[in-house]
Image 1: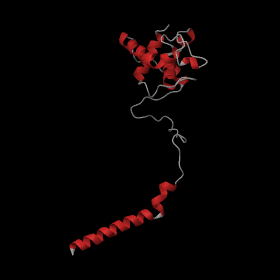
Image 2: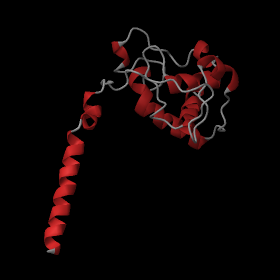
Image 3: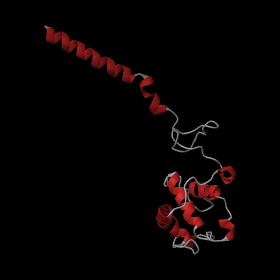
Image 4: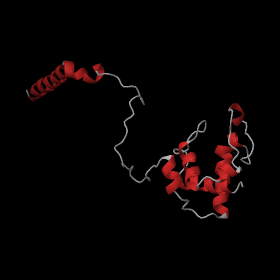
Length: 159
């Protein structure tokens, strides 16, 4: 007798669940307007900061406001050199003066030893590394802020 009541209760619950899923509101997500990934990027409100991340400034502000917080040392230059070799030398060449194997596919690749590039502020070089340039990809997701500053030190050593 008790098993019969349990069976009836179970059948009722399964039937109710099937009924709810069959109603039109069970298909709302299926029938909704599809938004393709990265087609409607929302801009965060002004002055919004990511948790644990520094405020991202534009190139003009970076040129004026950012200074290298890491002191130049042998270890920092070695780290900057290693990062440059793995990420930058394919376009800028091993010494930053010549065009690397990938850079040959582009019309202009900056010679990082020129007085024009060396006249850039540390903040501007940092911003170019982070955000990229005309043909250059940005390395914001690849390099940590400390690694970017190490590359800035290495670029400065190319004078």
